View 1 (tube, rainbow, N blue to C red):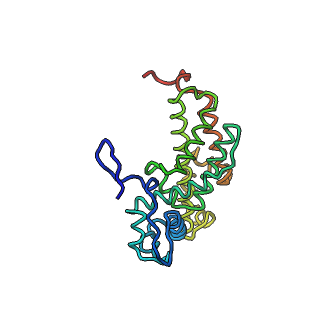
View 2 (cartoon, rainbow, N blue to C red; view 1 turned 90 degrees about the vertical axis):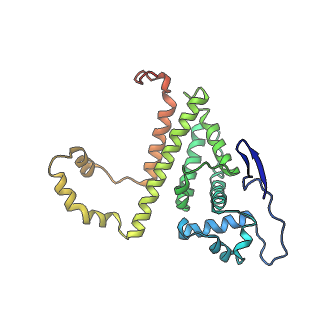
View 3 (cartoon, helix red, strand yellow; view 1 turned 60 degrees about the horizontal axis):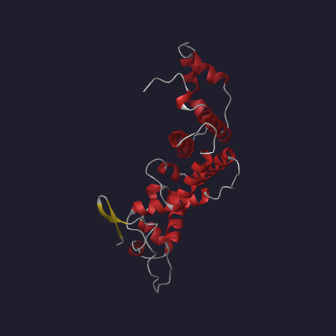
Amino acid sequence: MYLMDTPYGSAPSPVWERPEPQPRAAPVPLSRAKIAATAVHLADSQGLDGLSIRKIAKELGVGPMRLYDYVTNRSELLDLMVDAVYAEIAEAAPQSEWRAAVLAVVHRTRAAALDHEWFADLLGARPHLGPHALAVGESTAAALSQAPGLHDVDALQRALGVLNAFLVGALRAEITERQVARATGTDESEWQSALGPYLTRMLETGRYPTVSRLVHDGAHLDAAETFHHNLTTILDGITTTSPRENPNLPPG
């Protein structure tokens, strides 16, 4: 076990900093990247609840105990899986202009989350500190730091917080809707047929005029278009008026 000294005593060094175990004379060569790729594949098809060291080992054709040479627990396995997805996000095409750079990274994050639905469950749950996650964080922060109105590190921190909150909420909502529809076998038209009469009766009471307007006059919004519209609205908001410049904010 590799240890590092911290203010709280000795702790295992992060999985990304530990050297790979020495290769064995075994029929199946292993690496952390190979284990992570296999785990990602299983999670894509079975979800995180269906993921286990035993299943990964079976998929790789090795005994479960061999995997513990590479990852000491499930938490480390999830760290490697998350960073493997960030490696995909890091492939976003580089952009010279700050706004285009942020849009490219965020849209690439959405695409990766839709490909790996379990990834959204881990967004915001714990710090993502793998090398690819840090690379994505650096490119996002560096681009956003060039935006007008973000004059200091406090403004940049707030802007990143707003952007991350939007991203986590939007992706979790979109993916949850997809999962529910898939699990129940109910699409939007079937849902409307089942609950439409009830909703009509409730709206006819006149107690919900704004909801009624949204139901009757609002168009069905495309998920990708809505995501892009809301993202650009967020960027417009966080880069035009800093909190210090807003006269409507209460003091202190």
